[in-house]
Length: 365
Image 1 (cartoon, rainbow, N blue to C red):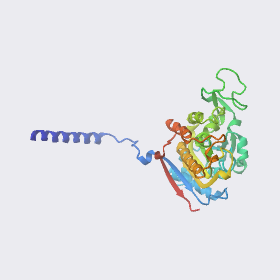
Image 2: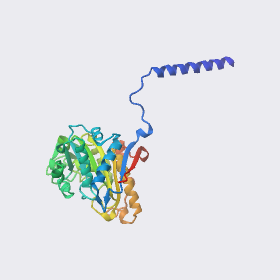
Image 3: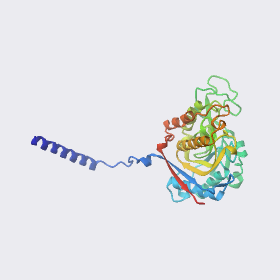
Image 4: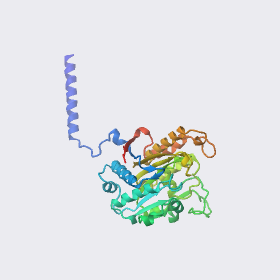
């Protein structure tokens, strides 16, 4: 028995020695496994009680909120370093907005202005900044074309810039083509299967900053970062609109196209005013003031947080109308959430609450 014990001790000792020698002679990986906190998608939420007054934004406060959110998320000391950690000096920067609902519940013009001012402060020339949405008429209606003269930037519509015949999203679902779509008026097999990407993205813009409102959508839950960029960048989208299941597939797949999602360097949610009902139409009686701006590199995480906020508000103000779409169908959050689950499967971002790290910053002024 004694011999067995001695042999066991000797074997353990030799095993430990071998493990030590192997570990000491193995080079350390320059890419260590991330901690739990590092593995999460980071979101910085900046709040100020003075961000708005009677739905009207305070420009000075918004400038401070934008700089605070960007420096916190990037870990940089100032706005100059923050932007240069995301962009190159030669980049053509496309600021994508969601302008259709108007200037109050769409992307707020003063939030956009604050972002543009911060970019110019960081040394980027106004001429290399393009403010864009799908249609120029929406930008004009939301009072955004004014920035051509006031800030010297470009303001362009993806539709007006034309569609690139060599860059497209292909789906077996045939579309009902309308005037302005690339294949409109053409006949033949396969016509209507493709959604072509705007030349604005394939030939001009090199990096994208996505600024979206916290606005209800009956089929996607929120008119957020994924929906805004995907549906705003391509033609032939009627085949997907107003169908929750089709959007849940098409939106993530279009966003994942290299010329789109891979170019996004920052996502900002304009949560100054949150409209939880109305579906892209400005309805202030279905809105609450949150006075927040939310920042993240992860569009999925931001959209999921927005969906949760909108759902909470709909339940808080629960009535038949606020829990149903325009046809009276009960809103199904689980079906809406499929879009964001699919996006996480495509590795666009994370959709699970436990994988999102939220830091809230309260500005006193």
